[in-house]
Every structure is written in C-alpha cells, then in structure tokens.
Image (cartoon, rainbow, N blue to C red; front, side):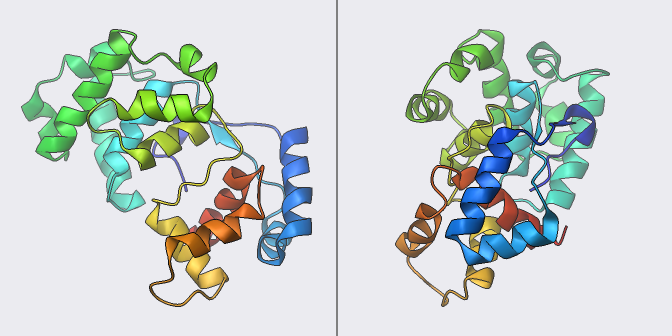
Length: 215
C-alpha cells in the first residue's frame, strides 16, 4: 500500500516497535515470516498531515493506486504548493474538483472532510489521544468516511500498530493468495489468521500489502 504523494510522507526509522513486531510475527506466522525474510524490517511511511491522509484516502476509494495517484496529483496542483490545507481545498468549486477526476460524490466527500478539519471537528492531536474505537466513531460520523477510510487514518496518520483493515480488497486478495484460501472464504477466516498477528495486525497487513504490490 503506497500513499499517493511520496513528497508528503517521510520514511520513519526502523524503531524498537517495528523490530518487536517483526520478531512477534516471525514467531507466530510462517507466511509473514517468509515475507519478513524477503523484505526485511518494514520501514513505516507516515505523514504529519491528517488532512492529507484523509483526502488521499477518499481519492483512493475503489480505484487502483495508479488512477488515484493521477487524480490526487491534479488535485494537489489545484490546491497550490506546499502541504495541502483545508482552506485551499474549500476554495475550489465542486466543478474544479470534478475536473481533477473526482466523482461528484467524492468531490462532496473531500469538501466535507476539509470543512471538518477547518472547523476543528477533526483534529489530529485530539484524535491521537483517543483509542481506536473512539477515532473510528469520530471519523465515520463525517459523510464520506467509512470503516476502510478510518482504518487508513489509524494506520497512516496515527501509526496505530494493531489495526486490521479487512475492508481492503488488496489485503484480502494478498491473504487469499498467500494462505491459499478458497474462493468465498468467510471473513471470519481472515480474522482468525490476523489474530495470530496481535498486537501488530497493522504490520502484518503492511507485509501482505507489500507482497501484493510486488514491491
């Protein structure tokens, strides 16, 4: 899972959390152990801007990374230089957002998110003090943010280490391939696999995403 604008993300150093996560995953799951051997310690990419993560997430909904990246690049150019700010997006008309490649509904959703951040109904520092369930409840109260988008925020904005974004099709496809799951396997089967990753389900998911992306 690559974020849409690598200029807005920084590679964090491989810290003790990631080393502990890799050791735990390697002991508890042979599939992930193989991926750790192939890719090494995961270098977590994050961004300081919660707003940017949310906009990128909405742009990415139900699109390939290639298509989402092209749309986000046009949107970022429209918002102007520097880190994206809610005020810059709110200054754009709905037609301008659609011209960037957003659907009508996504144009409305990114404006909803921009307004929530601008009015400080969404605030990264305040969200960082909440537990995962409270963050999910707060985010999904904004029209356009569902469970998948909230999971992406927990992972890429707040760097929570025990998130299992089961709603992500790429993750499910990667798991189905690596664990040789039959077509139509119940969601509970995916959860049982991920239970072995606790308390580092985020990191297990990142390795599976990486294998699916062919990185």
